Image (cartoon, rainbow, N blue to C red; front, top):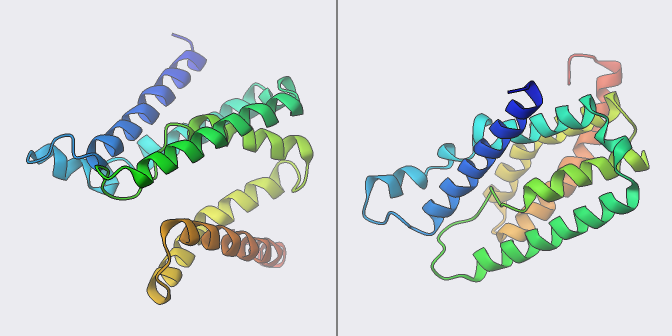
Length: 188
């Protein structure tokens, strides 16, 4: 098996396993069983192997094979729109389904939406290529848990408002961190 084949296979297996664990846990598929308790622990599906590895690997493949140059902007917009609509429908379904317990991190539709949104950002060059985009992504990744903790401590938001406010605050704070990083190189 080639290295590309191995990466694609491992990404598929890890991503599907993470989604399956969360769905099985949130829908109490193994209710009354030790697996139910295990699958309802966040660390079993929201971890570096089942959650982060697939996205990092897809980013690596986009860069290594210049996939952003092989997909035109129109197709990237179309596919990401499809992915975002699927995400919205999947989110609404899990939110309103009374048999579902708890919130979701691993949605099946994210694996379609996220890579093409990333490609759109690369193609439209709003933030820039390479280092600037990398710094923004790293900064958002590192700072968003701080805002989740602060918002949860002081405000009683639902998951949508929590996510929206966390995103906005994380992006704004990240832009400041990037400016600070230009003067003090050890920040990011």
